[in-house]
Image (cartoon, rainbow, N blue to C red; front, side, top):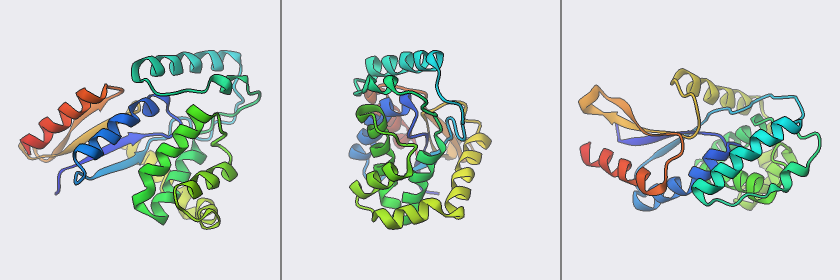
Length: 210
């Protein structure tokens, strides 16, 4: 099996947004190293509008991510009323992109994250998601059709199941494998947020050892 990375993430996970520069840096340094994205399912199918306590908790997370990563955040988000933090539509949008054009999977994942965190756009709205897909070079009407297909929903649920079965307990999680010296298993690169330089150093160590 070819050495590769598996990235468990969610486009509506703030620490994943903070980790985005590390993923970009890996792709720049190691353009031939395959990275598989598995949608983790942060808060799928949540149906409760955010209350003041939920907003306060999430804002603290955002502030911590901003400090640790330097990534931009639009705190106007917290002026919304009645927002339902359901991460399934955004995850399904990334899966739809993967089904249409695998090469655009990471691009749409990052575009959705930027739209949500830095531009205060509602990425639970299929219309917004189609517009973002179009920005990344996908046909909006075709994307909307694939987004709505049962097969796309099933593939999204399959990603969530893979994440759970792999024992992933938080996002971002980045693993590398196969490690032949360890029976072909995968080893952790990052279990949670790490600065770019540390991530690159760990990826370099993995590649030197395979």
